[in-house]
Image 1: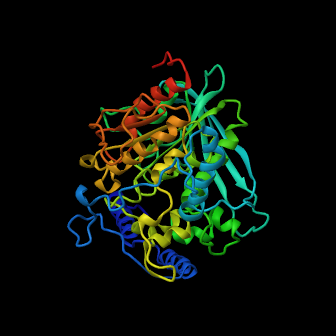
Image 2: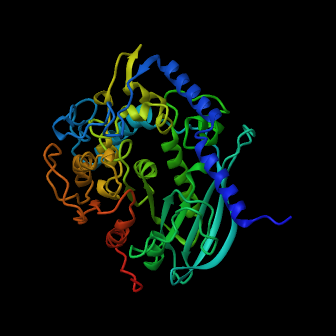
Image 3: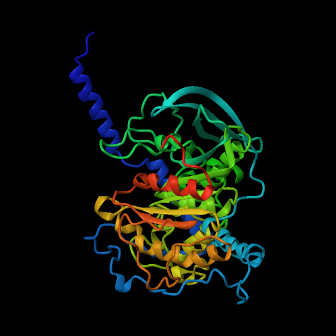
Length: 473
């Protein structure tokens, strides 16, 4: 029987539209609600404050008034020990202060990676020779199988690809980029977006093409293959595997820490691949994956450089700022899975432990940035007019970078070149970068992407790595 193609197209479109209109999977919503409530019960939380709305016309809209944006104006000092003693040497930082800060982030913010997390075994599943732009490349599709012999009911296979220039004379620096899939150069283009997807006419080439043109390689890592981006998934993925399908404890890791763990396992692989210069591996992500990139860099000192794209609350934005997205958004059922269970305490309005807020968190974003020092740390944002919403609090992220400067200098790195007064320092104008040091900032004039900053990031990293600029550029 012949089927009219126009009718078939309408049927297919209608089915797709119906699927989109169904909304979230009811079973997933129920599982998330149960997991969220379980953590509230473990912590003795009776009620949480609702997070502000991103809709500026809503009654509970987020604050965008700078006059009321700093209810907790003074940040914890990253160079003062818990006993009140000042940190004056790099040795004191590494042996005493840094471990204190890491412990606070582990316990209260991102959660702990279990000591019994299983081993990952990497396998190259496919190799291709292809082109990226005008350059020949070798692409490898990789699977990192997590040993699940202790709990076979849950299987975790980390998905990553590695692409390097075919004509490289030796190992090349590599950027691990969060958010990719399994596609290799030459595979059919994804239906929507993606790292290698063609940009709009007149814009810069894709980051992947710019990296290859400069003699870098890139790896694309799928975070969802490590841990699902929802609360229902906390009893699955790597977190569920280690917990054998049970609920988390309050100081167990959340998705951000799990994604960072996955990136570290990707770096483990790169240390075995002769095509990669494992001493010059970077990590990159945008939005929630910008948060994950910052967490990765902060915890794993093997990473040499990070590009933190539009990360906002839970990333480079100060928790203590009352601007846009707030701590209460991160403690609600939509985002709590990114964090340790203990983080929910700071959104509690009624609990056996009392009401707590952002001012009670022992650490803040400037200390997360400080954990990256003295390594190369580039903070990227766009502009609200193009879709990089005010919600992200660009100024609050700049304040965090300012407050991290003393640690970079203590460890021998060059900072942003501004004063350390985070109370008064303001962002430079759009498209004016602060790129002279190992800590860098640039707000481009695009939207919720780091795309326009790659052409500044790559030569900045090259310079700091002591690489001669590629003749290809």
